[in-house]
Amino acid sequence: MNRILKPCGRLSLCAEMVREGSRLADIGTDHGYLPIALCLSEKIPSALACDINPLPLKSAEENIAKYHLSDRIKTRLSDGLSEVRPDEVDDVVIAGMGGELIRDILTAAPWVKDEAKRLVLQPMTHHEDLVLWLYENGFAIIDQIAVLDDGKYYTVLSAQYNGQSQPCDSYTALVGKLGLDDENSRGFLSRSLHNLRNKSKGDPAVLPLVRRLEEAIRESE
Ligand SMILES: C[S@@+](CC[C@H](N)C(=O)[O-])C[C@H]1O[C@@H](n2cnc3c(N)ncnc32)[C@H](O)[C@@H]1O
Image (tube, rainbow, N blue to C red):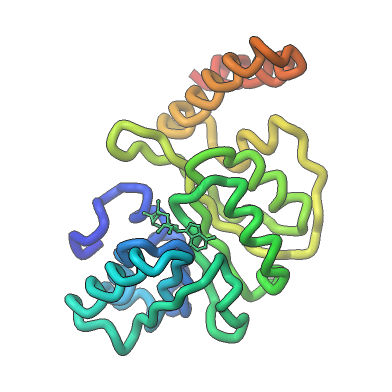
């Protein structure tokens, strides 16, 4: 997107899942590239670029100024969503953090449980903890895609509150809405399987999940 985000990379996928015309909060914005790309392409009118650390926020501010977007993208020092008001944003992106941290950020902002808001989440690790939290807290996963970026697999998902909590077993948490007919999804889940096999050496209770995932991947090939 506008050569700011790598085509087909993990942040491009996040950008694709943001809704047209929405006011965005990018939590953990760092360089600010995501809101910059989305505003330059005119997909969104405005954004809040938030970070818990002043240094990345300064770098975001410099980049925003470089692209003449200071009137449309405001920066904000914020731990998660603590400094963001619900009436300021429609879509929230949280990318490039661990799944547990993303879950904790969402837990601390109960206002995300709003059918009008859309979440776009890109966990670097422990995506299954995030999926479990979403299902148990009444969110529907609208879309989940895996991507291969610089030789590493990532998953990006979009979710929206519908108030219908669902029980979620460990297999569903791991696979979420990934389609096993997709090569990147299989690559992503094969990496999860590798990690699970290692975990099962010290924790045999994980073995049934290992077997189930092995079977699902085998059947999809
Ligand atoms: C690895 S960078 C990810 C940057 C960008 N979102 C991406 O995906 O490329 C993580 C950023 O999240 C910020 N961060 C970490 N914990 C945070 C929190 N609780 N609230 C807001 N930002 C946080 C860090 O300061 C850092 O700039």
